[in-house]
Image (cartoon, rainbow, N blue to C red; front, side):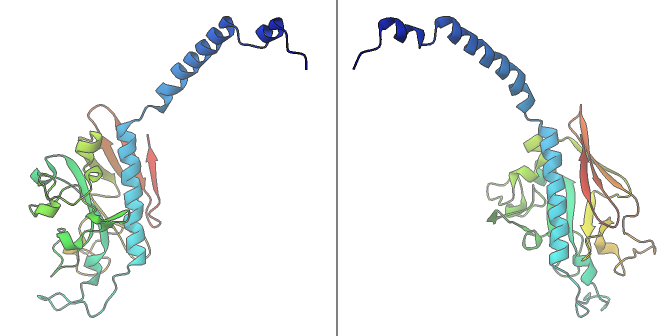
Amino acid sequence: MKKPSQNYLYKSAFTMLELVFVIVIIGILAATIIPQTKTNPLQEAAIQVASHIKYTQHLAMMDDRYDANNLDSNTKKSKWYKERWQLVFTSSIYSGGAEAYTIFSDTIKNSTGGANEDEIARNPENSAQIMTGGYSSTAAVNYTNPNFIGMEKLNIGNSYGVTSVKFSGGCSGKRISFDHLGRPFKGSQSSMKSPYNSNSGSQRLIKTECHIKLSNGSDTVIINIQPETGYVSTAF
């Protein structure tokens, strides 16, 4: 078999000029694409919070708390509705002074509106963790304690640089809860005297769009929750 000529081998290889062109093109593409893939911590925080609001709604719909025999030990009246699943934002020494949130069902004793360790939802991806970013002095729930078993990402102040969380529109109190139909409520269920009314007689069901604004001091993102359906969306 005849061997290819030296001239043929030379023509079938890349030239130095072609290699330079390829390197230049790769550099241009990298300079264009890489900045677009840069993460935005504030947007990541909003996406995470929106996802966990949806998860709270899912828990409320799957874990219907209705029980006519669940009575308040003081008033002897039904209190099952006070145990609805909820997400509450807090900022205290137990979260390291940073904005954080907790997902829980207020089941212990007479439902005080606060979260005990045994009331907090378990991380569905790791059952050894509870879904709080820091809430109280109990070691397992204290973000600053070495025995903390919460989720660091739920401490959105330290994890994503969120400096403030503000509620407006149809919601207030930095707290969202849901009934068995997935409808969103504002405020704490602990002060309610019936499934849909507060002490004053006004309903706690959210009637207009709820806005949760996350800020890092320079930028803001807004999480919107629709009345009735509890549909969650984000606006960057």
